[in-house]
Length: 310
Image 1 (cartoon, one colour):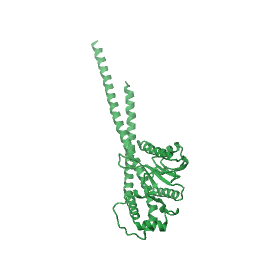
Image 2: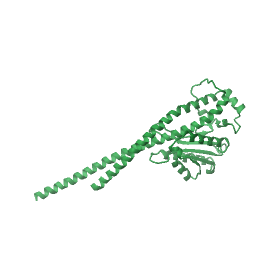
Image 3: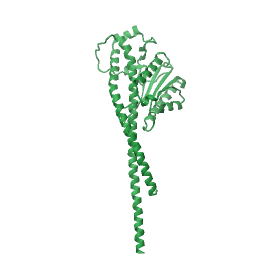
Image 4: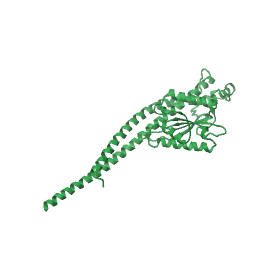
């Protein structure tokens, strides 16, 4: 059995750890509240904008105009970003010779299984791509988080761009710049498909990992909502040209905010669990200390009584 001094030292050590975990929990909870407000203010706007675009694209005349007047086969036309694919569909080497993976994680640890889950999905996606004939040279990686970037490098991939700073401080301007880079790469034919892998903030206790296609835009996965008879000004073609890039920029920014909120939620839960475990350990150590102290006092009393009787 440990001496009373050793137990006392452990109690003090755990108390110091408890102070750290409690402080980290409060900081993470404050950041989570801020992130929730940011995504709560942005998400309805982004969803309605996508819904408006989807409703416009339901119009047969507009679809015909897009094909006849703009031409979906023109590589300089942003409307080549529209295809009838599923949001979670894996690319095929024959149709998409080169793909880009945009990976979202945190820059630091102490957030439970948050990073491990993203890394697991990344490795699964990479294995599927390898089975479909892709090589490491056929994959561009954009890392928005130091942890996932390190994992990608260990897997033998070269980072196209390291954007870890965006993970801690999401910015619309930075997201819009990255969206433009990805869009230009897709339109120019440098990449044929862009895939996002990130953690979605479902609730404070749930952050499932999502893998979805960013480009080409999945038409039948757009939430159309109830049919709306839109009055369009100036004209559908001009609006389509403006809405598509805007929708893509907002989508990337929303995903960035979503991943950021998920990280803070995971860290809040992890620090809460760590604090609870520290409190339980302190209670156990205190009980052991009191029992040991009681035994010492009892032994001293017995020694006194024995000496008196002698």
